[in-house]
Image 1: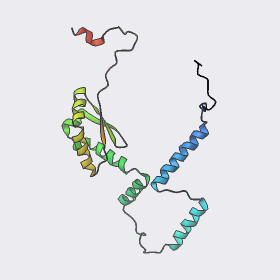
Image 2: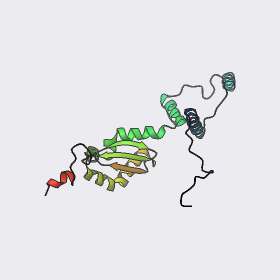
Image 3: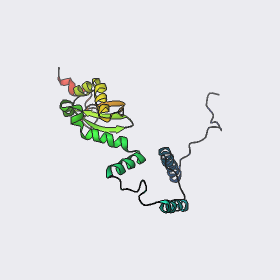
Image 4: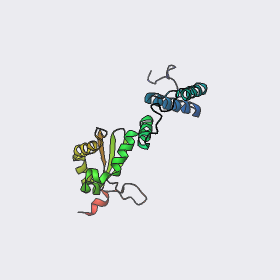
Length: 180
């Protein structure tokens, strides 16, 4: 038997319908909410809980005083899981103060995702230098936070024009072949 015969046990790939993909996305969102401590409540049960809280509420009891706006916003950020992103955007907003003028002149933060801060350098020389200094830069940024949020610093160099594609491409070494 030189040819491979199709096996009956190999399932054929099944394309998922839009409803199945939406259902899976909803399940992922619910799992994420459960991890944050949220839970689902039926509308009648929620209404009953609200009415019971209102009946039990007494004037001048703890928790009845107005709270400062800063506390309310902090509670919202914690509940939604946004504290890390807000802290990172605060540091990237003060990028020049955090890393210094010389480094800030030659690089800029692009993104932050799950502990990885990506910065773009103005030249390949600066990209190399920032790569060598990444530990020091990470340490300085984490000092600003007071804890380790940035676990990895990714440095991207500048994007250069590509000479390998196009209508007028000539075989050979490209723009370097005129330098002798």
